Structure formats: structure tokens, C-alpha cells
Length: 427
View: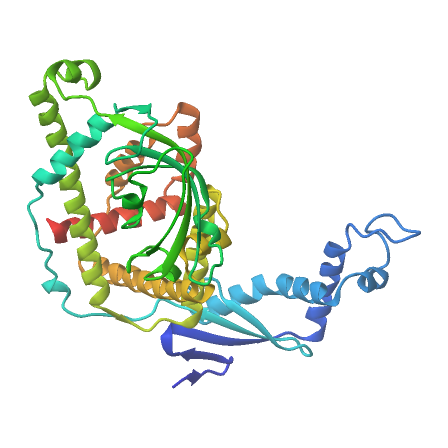
């Protein structure tokens, strides 16, 4: 159900507010004149200085759609502000604007306010606390890893055996004999018995020598990261370029002193165990925090407006795009590497947006309910801690952005509120 008020404002489900803006001819004409001046400022028309031709001549040179969009752009700020003030609208994202009629110019403006959030069982949230411990097999694996960093390799002219390092070029074909581009590689190194390649691959390398070529077919694991290869037979064509015998040093007190910055083997093992215990403690705390957030999300019931979901999807996609850019990858590269389709990736994006929004709104509701607050003193301490690693000039620049009331300041304050809330739940 909707409620239509005299000034053509409808309050709809999902905390949406739909408004109609109608502009008279004079107002549109004045805005269009300014739009022509702006868009025509760089136009070169014979017989006139740049941007100084008569308005009607410049208008003829400006694409109709570009002129219309700029006219609307100039009309909106004052009109939007008036709508918000007069109707006490509290938007949480930029409004969606649609032109419904050209003459008289009529725009449909859709705002989204903070939706009503219902929390169920928030006081029953309980996060199980597990004792973080270091398993003996993991401890030994770490000891082996450290010593392996000091391994030496010697090229050999004999058939390869367990623990040998193989350098090879290979490519692969699917069951139809078509090459799989993402699998072709050169100079790939693998140790026989390391189990880093798909099951069966390293076994096929036993007995090979430098210069050998070999083809064999294996099925990819059911849970392989590349979706389109799961359970699929793949034929590999391998060329061996080097076989090396790997020598692992013995872990002695002398080795510990020389290479591991420890007085003895027991001292080295003690350092490793303490470091691993700290990592396990941190991982356990992160698990409990994630558990608490997931319970809050599941306890949250909220109707999300389509515009709100679209805005969240745009933000997530932009974060993802920037991450790929830092890694020197394109979206196409990522799709090939993961084996995902554009459709499946889009579906995941929508699901992620819905979950993230629900969690954020649930967190805000619980923070309000429990009256979680951050004092000015706490904020100052947080900002000071953040500034410590920075140089003097950078500190001055960053501090300006983190002045009270500024966006970064409010974002940090929100983060600290969430941290305080979660800390009360995980103990």
C-alpha cells in the first residue's frame, strides 16, 4: 500500500519515497541556457571566438541528449534539497532520477531511507569459545617448511625419483582435444611427493629424465577451484627440461645458530611453537568475531529496496575492480582463472550485496539497541595510534581528513562501535 500526499509524494514499502517533480517552461528554459553556456564553452564555430557564438548556433552543435542531461543536472540540486526539507526525507543513498515526460519536464525521484529492521533473538547470541592449540602435525610441518627454505638442489642425469625437483613445460587438452589456454605453462617446478599438483600428476613424473616428453590423462578433482574442469578428464603434454636432486639440511644446534637465529634446536622449536600459538589465538578470535556477525545477520529481518541493493552491488563491484587492478588482472582474466561465468559471478555479487547490507543494518540496530558509543577521547586515541607509523607531513595531511564531522572520522567511529559491540559478544 502507498500513501499519496497532496505534493505528489508517495511513501512505499522498503523505505522508498517516490516523488514527482514538474518544472515549468520558464524554469527549464533558464536552466537550458546555462547548460548551453557550459557545454558550448569549448565549441569552435567559424566567425566567432571559442564559446562566444549565439546560443541558438551553439545549441545546434550540442547533442540533444547531452543538453537534456546537463539541463536536468542543473535543475536537480535545488529541487532535491527542497523535496528533502519539505517532506522530511532522510535518504541514505543518492536518489534515483528518471525522466517520465519531456514537456512539461517531469521527473520521478526515488529516495531510499533507512529501512525498518527487526531483530529476533539478539540477546541469545552466543559464540562458542574454543581453546586454540597447535597440532603436532602442523608444528612438524612448520619445522620442515623452515628447513626446506635452506634446501640446495643439484642437477642430475638419471631417472627422477621421490623428492626430486622437476622443471617442465606443459600444456593440456580437454576431452575433445581442444587446448585449455589457462593451463599452458613454461618452466614450472614441482617436487615429486609434494602433492601440490592434481592427484596422479607427480606419480607420472617418476622415472622421467631431462629431454623426455610424456602425455597422460587425469581427471580433475571434484572440488577444484576451476569450476568448468571439475571431474573432467584432461590430457597433459609434458616436456622435461631439468631433473634436480634436492638436499635438505639436518636440523642441528649449529644450523639453528647459523641460520635460524636461535641458540639451539630446542630454543628454535620453542620460538616456532610460541609464534604458531599466537597465530592460532588470532585465527580463533577472528573465527568467533565472524561467527558473531553471522548470527547477527541471521537474526536480522529487513526489506531491502532494489535501489539500495543496486547501490551496494556497485560499491562491491568497484572494490573488486580496484583489487583486480592492483593485481594487474582484468575481469576477463579473473573469469578464466576461476572458471566462473559472467552470470554466476553476477549472481554471487547480488547475494553478497544482500548479505552485506543485511549485516550492516543489523549491526546498526544492535548498536542502537545496546547504546554502544565511542567517546571523543577514544576517537583521539584511535587516530593517534593510526598516525604512529606515518611521517610528520603525512600525519598533518591525514589529520585534516580525520577532523570531527568529516567522512573518514565518521567511518572510523562506526568501525570502532562495531569492534566494541563484537568484543562484548565474543568475550
